[in-house]
Length: 141
Image (cartoon, rainbow, N blue to C red; front, side, top):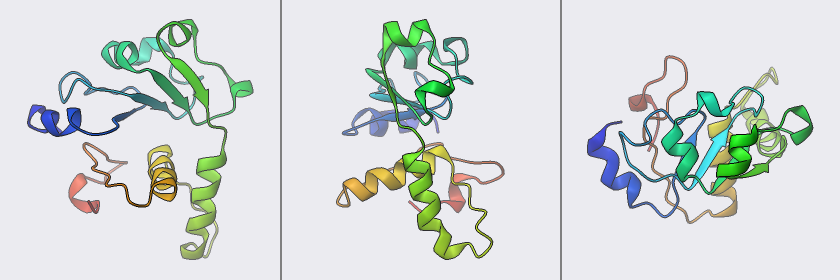
């Protein structure tokens, strides 16, 4: 992901940035929603300040009782705790393909699946979406 992708990102209907949003500012300026894996892990000191300032909402893939976002999130963005619903739903959907029942979908994959479930006509474009050793050329677009 680079500045070349910025116009495509900024022109999207909805821009979600994940976790620390390291490329917000360098690869596009927009962020509508900042999505965090766990509130207690991502305090405001670990988040790209551009993303934190520009996001109108922060979605947390956790229960509020497991750790709340810190004071700066409360000031800058409206927090929304998703609980474990999206990840449990993704895990259940993956069970058909996992004979050992050990699927552990990422937060990003879970939220993308949830969005597609709610809006099957949506077109989703992924930029800089990787996990571990996977690179974008291995991901279907």
